[in-house]
Length: 148
Image 1 (cartoon, rainbow, N blue to C red):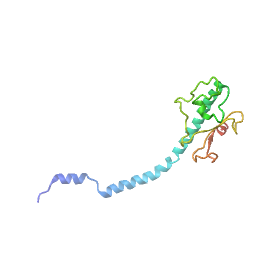
Image 2: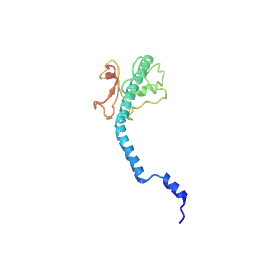
Image 3: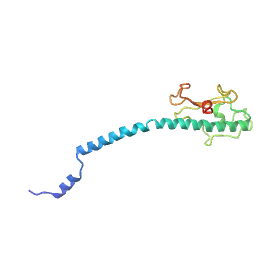
Image 4: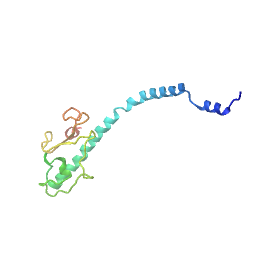
């Protein structure tokens, strides 16, 4: 009976099923320890992005106000930063760099009112936040950001 050394080498280099299962168990244990630490980070990043958007849109609204002598009305909305309203004199837009209105990190349009309910002499600008419903307690807005 002859012994083939090539088969022995192949067998010695291969992983057994038990070794593979052991590696999978170790990876699963490590993942169960690491994943919870990063789970909430995505939502925090979206909230931070919405706050930054509201601040930058606020700068654009202020530029519109300097150019036109007023903020866009509620019916004109943020669209007035993309297309000149008929009543806006000296409009220097589009004010958004790409000519498109931004949406919040949850895919919804930002809510704009002028005059504002919270800023009677200015405007209210907000995102509905993670629950995607206005007034759900997790809204991100320009009137509470100014207080922080």
